[in-house]
Image (cartoon, rainbow, N blue to C red; front, top):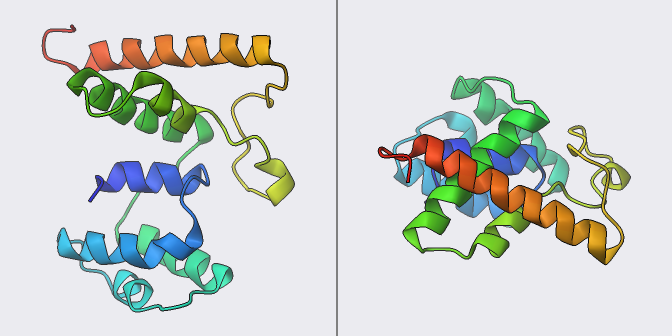
Length: 148
């Protein structure tokens, strides 16, 4: 199971679908995060999106997680992606896609706006991807013991 801080950041950035949350909750329970809302969430078979959102909000409160901002959530994801890329468990480009804000986030009624407006043309998208890759590598150097 992914670390709790990564799951929280991905949920905040709307990178986790609500229909996946019962499995995520079950994994968190297995990892020792015993709170009532996770037990309820893990027991759901065909969850309604609103029910899932309410239970996730309750779990966040029960677990005592601090509020997130778009920047803080993106940094959490970037650090995990950077560590995975340096360990060779993910490709940097694949990981960079996780860090980019969703293109239609505001159109979906999201409460956490993306960090930058969507990039439409290929050249601007390639430039943004290169910036994200550079930021991931810099973040990784900051979390590794020797800064490699």
